[in-house]
Image (cartoon, rainbow, N blue to C red):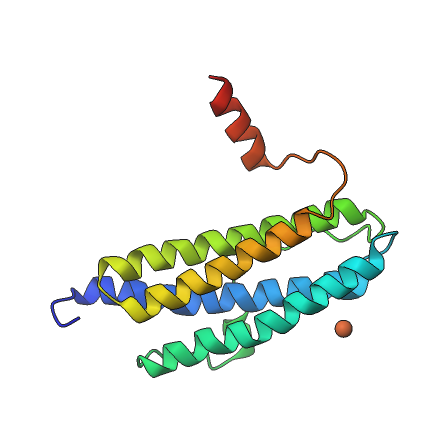
Length: 170
Ligand SMILES: [Fe+2]
């Protein structure tokens, strides 16, 4: 990795910390659904989001400890740790369970995309260990979004689905 441009290295380092922040936010968002959701799917979603939290507790530790192992500093304040790129989901009606489940699945999918982005940049500078960590975390969040979405019984459409449908028609 000695021929790497320092700007490229900094971009990857900054992204490692940003995905840590985004992951902490998604972990807490998952926790709010675990506690707050109401309706016929409560128990199923309560258990699923409990499992996702368990996986993510280990996951955020892996990201932070990977950062420290390659000499990147981790956030030193809680405020910094939670400055995320991810928008909070709307839980103002905790009885609207399918909407909440769909929104949480979209958040996990977005996080998976952010890990994919990091994997791509890390690959470009030959940082195999970061690329590998990012690919692993991305894969886990793809799985979480799938498990959440698969509990929906109606034909849902996200903005991304609508865009893909339109593209396949044209
Ligand atoms: Fe719990």
